[in-house]
Image 1: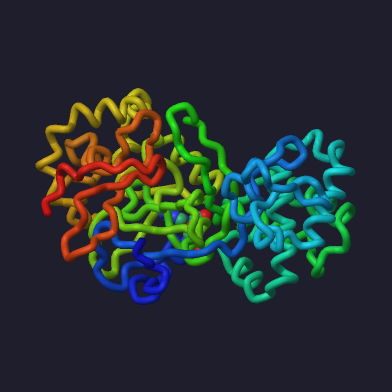
Image 2: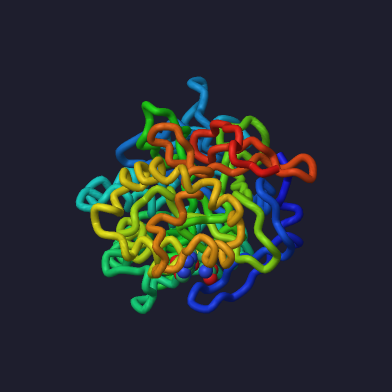
Amino acid sequence: MNDGGAKAETLLKVAEIGGRGRSLVAAQSLRAGQVILRESPLLLYSAFPFLSSVSPYCDHCFRLVPSSAQKCQSCSLVSFCSPNCLASHTPWICESLRRLHQSSSAAFADQPSDRQVQARFLLSAYNLAAASPSDFQVLLSLQGSGNNGDSSSSVTDSAAAKFLHSLLSAVCPPLPVPISPELTAALLAKDKVNAFGLMEPFSVLNEKRSVRAYGIYPKTSFLNHDCLPNACRFDYVDSASDGNTDIIIRMIHDVPQGREICLSYFPVNMNYSSRQKRLLEDYGFKCDCDRCKVESSWSEGEEDENDVMEEMDDEDGQEEEMEDQEGDKEEEGEACGNGVDDESSFPHAYFFVRYMCEKESCFGTLAPLPPKTNDASKVLECNVCGSLKEDEVSGN
Ligand SMILES: C[S@@+](CC[C@H](N)C(=O)[O-])C[C@H]1O[C@@H](n2cnc3c(N)ncnc32)[C@H](O)[C@@H]1O
């Protein structure tokens, strides 16, 4: 795997973009399949509600633990696959988990199970504050304030922050550093906007893949959202090599220098109203990307997710016509008619045909393998199921 992390500074630069905050833009032209960023997590925590389920994953590296693995002998709540991984389990986290487990079934009873996962995040964040103040400052510098004025924070969020702050302050051993209720609310807001889920592997029998762990990757967190992204993320949690929890960002297609690099924050097959709802509720903004501009004028029936797939089949014939416009949004806007006035009702069919995984219920995004020569690879890899596909429309 090409290690793009070492080169990230030369490939990308941080820019402020009006109405979108900070963003990563191409510092030079970037090529299809190029790894533009590889980053280890600043903080990683289990997605398993610890009161109700025992995670089958190592609580540090999140690989499946072998049956011979031992639970932590003090808290008996988490398992580790090796002494190295166990070393990450600090006495404070261990004792906090033990006390929360002992005392809080009642306290958590009326709360959604997500609250337990948020508690795990806060324990990791408080622990980071003591273990690595500079990393904690990086966490604090990320988007999300938890203030009432913050459009991604809701009344429920502030009630959750109050509940968790008072619970953790009362039950855990003294917090490793002084933490105010406002700081707890800010940390939860940052987690909501910036955490990436490391998912269980995809299989047709396991369509509703759950999340193994959530990670905060600060550089990757500068990437804004677009409903037709030009980059996508890969992870290889089950890989036996070091860095299995790293996030890897790879270009889907070529982009010129100066272009904003965007991910989709969720599977690209979601329909317009689901996307808008999710972006507003979870990320606090209204998306006005080229795709949303077009789909905002669609009628309700047209925007059904299945219709998107059917329409994709119908419009296969447009594929060649649209092939030339790949990679340059402004050009795409003109040539493909991405403006809302254009007659074409589905100008982004090209993206679906070429870059969406065909495997049933996968809905992953395809990106070319990292180029080994000057030419882009003709093999595309799905970022969800990992399947490889020959790029039939590659002009290379
Ligand atoms: C993971 S952060 C991305 C980096 C962020 N812009 C920053 O300044 O740190 C996600 C937040 O960025 C903003 N954002 C992302 N994509 C956007 C878009 N397409 N339009 C407007 N704001 C966007 C929203 O505030 C969202 O909650």
